[in-house]
Every structure is written in C-alpha cells, then in structure tokens.
Length: 110
Length: 112
Image (tube, rainbow over all chains, first blue to last red; front, top):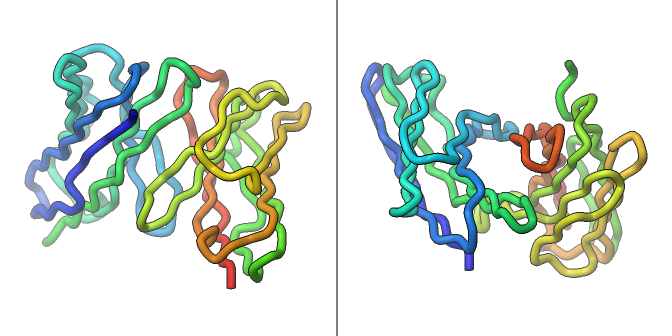
C-alpha cells in the first residue's frame, strides 16, 4: 500500500526556521520530492532526494532517511511569501507515478 | 521556455455531461501526467502518458480517460460527470519518465 503522512497545518514567525516532516510507507521507492503550492496556483518543484542525507538549496533544505521512511523540509529565514502548502511526494519505481501526501499548510506570521 | 499550459482554466458543467481538458507540455517534454486535486483527497494520480502510450493509471473509474498526441500534447476526458468530479485537474510534464515533473496551472472543473 501507499501511505504518506504530513502535519496538516503549521504556523511560524517571519525570520524563523521551520521543519516540515513527512513519513511514508510505500511499496517501493524511487525518490522523494517536495513541492510548494500557493493557494490557487500549481505546485512548483522545490527539492528531490533519492539518497540518504541533506540536500541544501538556498533557504530550503531537504533531508531523507530511507531506512526510517522519513523526510523533512527545512525552511530558513522565513518570509511572508513562504506561506503556502508544502507537498511531499514519493515516486514509485514500478509505474514511475507519484504518490502525494496530504500537504502541510504553512502560515508565516509577521 | 514556456511552461505547461492547460485549457480551459475554468469550466462549469452539469451532471451527466462530458468534458475534455487539454494540456500542452513544456517543449521537449515527452511524459505527461494528470492529477486530480480536491480539498478532501489531496493530489491523486490519474494517468501518465509517454510517447503516445498510457504507461500508468491510478485508481479512477473508466469514465476518466486520456490520450497523448504525437506532439506530446495530451487531453483528458471525463464522461457522465458526477458532482464529486468537481476538482482542480493538474497536468504535469517531464522530459522523460524518471525526471522531475513540472505542473501546469490546472483546470478548475465545477459540476453542478
């Protein structure tokens, strides 16, 4: 089966650091992706992990532990424009399709 | 490079009707996937096309179908619309099947 869990909502303050967790139980694994989706807009690609460890890209970093079925997205120096939903997705090695988590709605407060 | 485009952006239909949505991928991208997004179910995979062939299909009824043309453009059709089909339908393209997907703006379908 395929199951991906993320917290539903999170709130943080401008300038702070926030960590959004994602746990997954999927039949096969071929990479974990993070997408950002602003209300009413399409998801945009943020990061990709296929090996264990941390991938850093500017203010955003993503971590993966395949043995634990766990990933997190770290957002530093939060800005108001970071208020959005963050989607965790796992790609299946069989059909190459993506299974998306429910998304975490992040609100950044002044 | 132009991004993924989807038409129409908004659509209102009534139960029992059918609808066709269109997706033009980023130039050079050969893989096109379709997703349904609703507040309750999140993003759910519908199907994937690569080189005009359906390579993968999600758990949706046969009322949902699609196709891909030789220029990689794709269409999705939903027949006998139900109220529960109201959703944002997103198309995503990638250069190849193993690459990162890039999403279009979506078509917001409302079924009355």
